[in-house]
Image 1 (cartoon, rainbow, N blue to C red):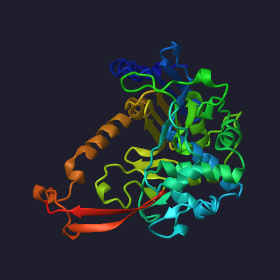
Image 2 (tube, one colour):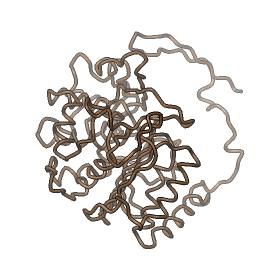
Image 3 (cartoon, rainbow, N blue to C red):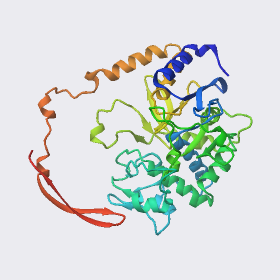
Length: 409
């Protein structure tokens, strides 16, 4: 389906695809419960000459997080998980997260979901022609280390969402893959959505490509809940519509309106507790699986994804009832910026507001400290650190002695 309203946006997509050799791209737009644009461009599989369409299943990368969070909230509604209980209550007693700083009871399910649990970033990829990924219990044993005080610092964490998909398995008695299929995808009519590519859906997969246009071998993660969902633009658009409470006739109400609202309440601020991010130009906050911006451009609920062969974004504007999906099977910024072009078409004056907002963000006077003394930025070690330090590094294989020397130079 296409619409002449978006002719200039379509031209930008086609031009960028040629300029950057983007193999495939899909877009979907809905407003007030009505589908107004759904279209795909280029190749799902360039080598096999399979074209992309609105039902092609793209790798979503981190848009997997709000989808996993939807499954989590299903169990919360059933009373099987409590958001403010310690996450260690839901994992094996023999395989607890190790809390090096702070109190274990402060590492709650909610803080794992909003990235303030104290867990580190973590990326762990497993190509199909490499070693098999370990069970999640082993990943928790190796990498389940809380290294910041819970609730004090925002740190985007993939392993956190790997732990959440592990909780879903333990509490539901189903595999994460099966639970998401039975409790989220099928009830919402998302027949072209699965964790990885489920058997029988192989023909609909968009292959992932490098920036140089080379086909990437299939890869997996030990943080499936953070990264492993594949979905079509058609189905992801309807997932977003569900989260704006735009009920479609064939969709079951898998969550109450109260649970949907709870997911969109900002409970963490990106940059929170991180001195290096004190001058962040973003006003983005985070709820349960969603990034939340509320500024001069209005309220926007969203999530993006990016990794090898993937660039994606899902944007929702509750006040205008707008949902936008942009998916690419290579890592390129087009999927992350096109929503503003679409909003400039849909909302009168949005383009002017956006230009003013960007100018404000780019104005150094808005963000730099009052002093402009460049000498204060000269590199040098903090005096209290100077000297020799002896200690221990804790690893899953045991403790390793370590000495570090800080020199005045």
